[in-house]
Every structure is written in C-alpha cells, then in structure tokens.
Length: 344
Image (cartoon, rainbow, N blue to C red):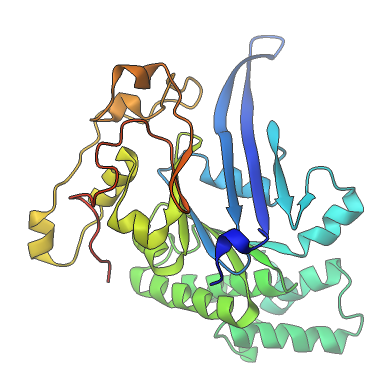
C-alpha cells in the first residue's frame, strides 16, 4: 500500500461517543448511562483492512453501527470521504449508504427466510433503483453468486437450504451488490466451523483485491485479524487503548491489555507454547455504567501506578503509525516475552 500518511482517509472518526441512557422509576426518569463508546479517534484509509478487536461488550459493534450511520452518536463526528454523515440531508445520506455495506455475524438471522437467493440479492438493486431492466438486474444477481463461489442453480433456493458457510457467501454477495467502497464485517466468521472460516477469509481477501474494497473488520479473534488486516485498534471498555500496524502489534504489544490478549492465544508449536509466559488478568471487566476513573484498565493491570487511578492517559503517537494510551508500559520499545510469534 501507499504511505498512509499521504492518503486521504476514506473514514475518519473524531471523538466519537455513545452513551445509552438507563431509565427507572414510575416516571421513567434517566438515572444512569452505559458508556458504550467513549471518545474514539482513528482513520481508515482506502483499500485497507482495519480491525477493531477486544472482549465482548467493549463497544466494537456499537462503533461499527455509528460508522454506518445506523446509530446516532452522543457526541463526535464520522466523516466518509470528508462528509460528516450525521449532518447530511436524508437524500444525500441515502445515496451515501450505497457506498457502505455490512456483513453480519449470523448468516442465518440476517437473511429473510421467505425470500429466495435471487430476491435477496435483487432487493438492494431494487431499493436504489439500479437496473430498470429486469433482465439486466438478473444478470447482475447471477454475477454476484458466481463471484462468491456459488452457482446460478442456487438462485431459486431459500436460506434454510444452505450450510452456514454458503449462507455467509450469500451475505457477502448482498454486501457487494451496490459496489460499495466500505464493507463493515461484524464477526463474519465467528459462527462458522474453523475449516469454513479459512475459506471465507480467503474469499474476503480475494474480493478486496478484485473490487478495491476497504474493510472495517470487527472481531475478538486475533488469529483472524492477523490473517486479514493491515492495522488493528484494540478496544477496552469503550476506548481504543492501542492502535498500530498488525505485524507490529503482534510482535511488540505496548499496552498491558494487548499483551494479555496475545498471551491467551494458543500457538501450534508445543515448544514455543511451553516457553511463553502467560498473563492471567485478575477480576472481571468493570461495568460500562460505572467505568473506573483514570485509566479504565488499571483495576486489572499488573503494572498500575497510583496516578493510573486518577489520571486518564492521553493517546500518544509513540512510533510512526503507532498510538498508545498508557503512561507506564514498562515494556515499551522492546519485544514482549508474550508476543505471538506466528499464527499458521
């Protein structure tokens, strides 16, 4: 890829926050808030694969939904090709939605069981009034199933007649129907068998090259991210704690949370696995309703200092294209003993 610092970002997220109110009492008064996303900044460049990783409940999916315009932020901005999507008129936003598509986690629940594959793939073309001629629309649908590894004989079948991997291929074809620039893939392989996961990931890589796609890949599986993504943002409790190139994150994690996540990934080589230091995090993930003061990771961090409890760490660029929100990071600038050597 070109030098990213010289490229105009396709997506830019600025200080994005999403707080969900909690109502209680007879008059349904707002009493508390869930801090789902709490001040996130990053850029996604054209034709790159950008990953959001972290534990369940850290805000990954909510962040992805806001980037798609499906969720309104509490504060902050999302720019798509320099356009603030939350300030666009409805007509312009509708046109912009053609450029942003999503692949869902569960390929069965995301497909209408009462529609055939042909109807599912033709629906976005009909909604956006593409191909007035039904014959042209059918040719487009036939091309879509071919490009994801299915055949035209599948067009008249219903979702329940397919395996999980085949259903996800249909979901991918639907996402490609409008020739988008950005595809948000929300845990697209987590519901599939391991052998099928590899096929879908390889398909996504091939489609990215063929159609010049940009991916926002949401996952909790670091091995999947290693295989597909150029850059990684690690989220913890609504905040991005580390961001950088995938290879650098894996070989030299800088944040204690990133280091702990990588230490939990099994390595196929028994010799390397025995030599590797494991980090076991103490306690549970704090509630996003009452997040800890200061650094949100400090209750579980083995390197925590007194100031970590009171001072929220700023996100700083410690190396080129490497961002970190941690004031202590004792392993900074040196490879970690728990770094993941290689994932096959």
